[in-house]
Length: 115
Ligand code: AMP
Ligand code: ZN
Image (cartoon, rainbow, N blue to C red; front, side):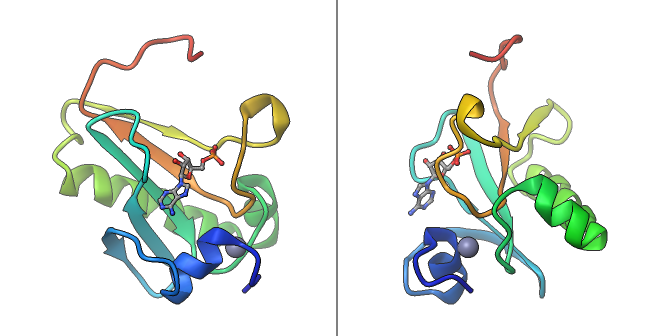
């Protein structure tokens, strides 16, 4: 737990969120500024600064984040229509919150290449 980390505070419950799915190790909640009809963030409850450092330290946890991303896609009904998983990492990807998170985006046709 990092007290100055927004997503650690969401895990702790001191910052409110709209929770979609939760396991012992993972939390999924709606993005506050949705970029598609479905825009959910899946995070490990433990703090890692980005997806790669999470996967290096705890590959099982990284797998649990991906499994939860699939679950929330089902919950929102975009598993059949399709969805995109995004882990923004670092400055060029415009990562703004340095607690690993997977964006689950769906419910519209997502353009490629991304902006
Ligand atoms: P990134 O730019 O990949 O680091 O993504 C951070 C995401 O967190 C952005 O899509 C924000 O809209 C989202 N976000 C920021 N604050 C909150 C919050 N309090 N609750 C839910 N999502 C948030
Ligand atoms: Zn954190």
